[in-house]
Length: 89
Image 1 (cartoon, rainbow, N blue to C red):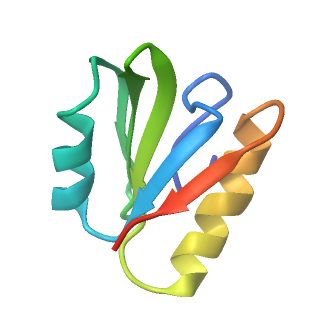
Image 2 (image 1 turned 30 degrees about the vertical axis):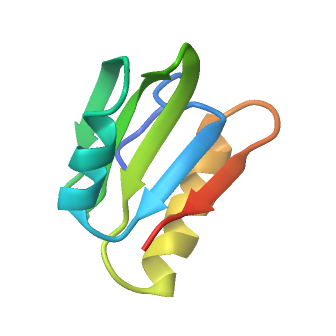
């Protein structure tokens, strides 16, 4: 996708969103493994892996509702099925 630089298969159906890139890296270090790490030219940073065997993604959006809006729309276009978002921070 244009803003997040993700494509089909890069993201899990469970997504944690944070504003800070530092916080996203901190959360990703808790994953069992990291299968995908994408940094976009538009300021998004995405990690996808597993946590206790469950696929999960964490995305740093930066500040502001417009960034979150773009991220949600683009993630929705890359994932099949129901999405669950959890915003931290």
